[in-house]
Length: 189
Image (cartoon, rainbow, N blue to C red; front, top):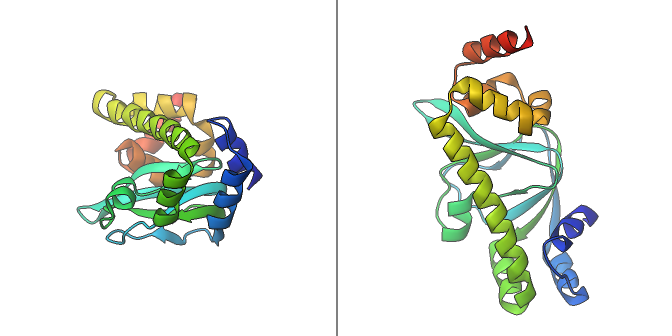
């Protein structure tokens, strides 16, 4: 979990006691490609850190899966409202590749916040980072045409286009797979 502690240390000071406490509470798990990390209507009890692999979150609308986001190496993944409000999730999370994850239970995370005040700074900075990413995506979804969303992906998240099946990218962009294929071919020309 060197990558986790490396990332956390860029956000704030991690004392040896805090590092030991996190290590004691973390569990390592693996998922195979296609395996579900969380199903819609389950309560998300863990916060996950992706050390290897790629996952997608999606929800169902009119009997169709709509991809809402992707997370890969060095990202945290959680069903936000479910985890923090302790309610059933409105989304599912699925591994798109074989994954290795570190996870911490909600109660253990809250215990660390209560007992290690310096960790609150790290938590705040992570929350700010992911809140800004969410706001950026929502703004893009409301204000951009599909081709502009695709251009944004090309510029800022090109690696996703190499790792994610076309049908999930199309769903993420809010277009039909056929429309997405046409957009890609037009851009290549």
